[in-house]
Image (cartoon, rainbow, N blue to C red):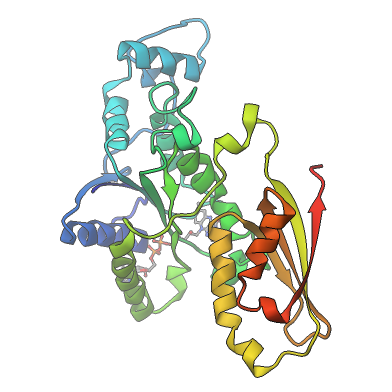
Length: 321
Ligand code: FAD
């Protein structure tokens, strides 16, 4: 497998850089070839402007996508950009390695995306989503450090949830270009943990990277579900699950399997949201938002839940407003 690590940290001794270098050595030890794009060390210029091109389609008005399409036709990308585009085109696994800055990528990495994912050459026309460069075959991974801890990004925290923070990368860059996003690897608050805890992060990264070729990626909706790029052809169903009887020991013993089931539905994009009352509440209820074709399909999914025999379900179709 050819792996491209695009790394964006200005300090080679940082923990973010240590993670990126650990990824490089772990992949090499597995026999993969690794291209390490160290954006700061290579003095990558992230500013997108006329110097992206050696050709000019319209000298009066700079429209990036028009110039990119023209440069694609005539081979007119500037040599520094052409080099980066080829790196992207030749990878099987794309890794973005960066510290979280302002809930997003550092500007140098955002600039790499702005310049390298060029219209015509990389995306556009049929080349988006499942038809994009990744062809629903190549994979992509975020390797990120943060300042805030997991509670701050866990859905009930002061910040947006991790999946919302990462949507511009996972959906907007990876999946928009046909790369299958893997679950992100996040080293939470490395500044505030012990050296031993940081060492554990490095080891768990090596372990995790053994499965990048086989682990099931996150499933985001295909373009085919949105004819004419209109609204989703799949519907939304709100399920209210009620537990009529108090929780007993058998019920409790099924909870881990139930949680694994829900996590898999989330990965598959079937379950968009899950909320529940505190476990001891009587009567207890949970609320599940599904993306599916019809209520019968939802019913079939619910029947597979380990706790289904203990629960009653009410399925309500929601309007597309
Ligand atoms: P470092 O400070 O480089 O490393 C932490 C510690 O690890 C250091 O003591 C270092 O010596 C040690 N270390 C290095 N290598 C190793 C090794 N091999 N083994 C063990 N220890 C090692 N945070 C948020 O949560 N949200 C934001 O929106 C956000 N916005 C930011 C915007 C800006 C402009 C900046 C500058 C920071 C922002 N932050 C934000 C914080 C930022 O995400 C964290 O500071 C960063 O992710 C920490 O990772 P680091 O690699 O830079 O840590």
